[in-house]
Length: 181
Image (cartoon, rainbow, N blue to C red; front, side, top):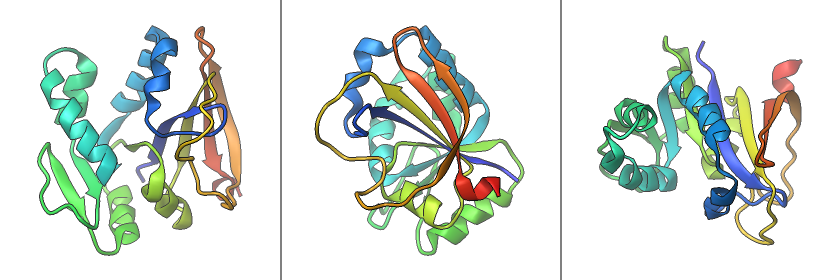
């Protein structure tokens, strides 16, 4: 069975929104870490907002490096209630999204990678579809913005790996606690 891996950037105070704050800390080590996640996957699972941002940003970078070529070539599964059409190798998942994602996990292949947080992450957690959460914690506090999970959420995780980068960023790799029982 394929794994669903969620990879997201987060500040020390839990904000995931508009990660322009990553730039001063970005380095080759982090790029290699992200490249390893991408190349261990053969499909992307995206919410509408992430899909729209990526579909604008990545196609113009085709041919510039292996990461851009890989992300552009991969099939994308976009969860959206409002999107009517999708390009960029994308299929829109609607209706019973949890069932559709569970079917994707049953198909042969590598990991399915999801970037970001939001409602789709909550759906994955609620339906026990998340296999790993890769948090890259950046040494910055921004004070306000969208959080990884909504206030009042109850989420149990088990730390399975860590990595510290020279820029002060820390990668924390978790599995949902239920997956460890």
